[in-house]
Length: 81
Image (cartoon, rainbow, N blue to C red; front, top):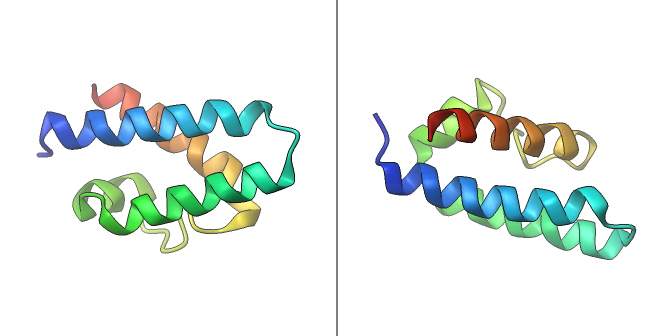
């Protein structure tokens, strides 16, 4: 359904950003990561994003749910590898 490259690219990017976000104590750094992910979402495979989002239009784009969204995205992408 998706190219292995699009899954691997998204997984690598999200996983790396999630690991930093998880352990960061810097609100500015967390905000920068949220912005980087939102920018990535704009250019990623739209069908892959739609599957990860499962109907949520604000998936990975809302500050209030970002932490759980990114964790969910990483887990889903890892399962696809």
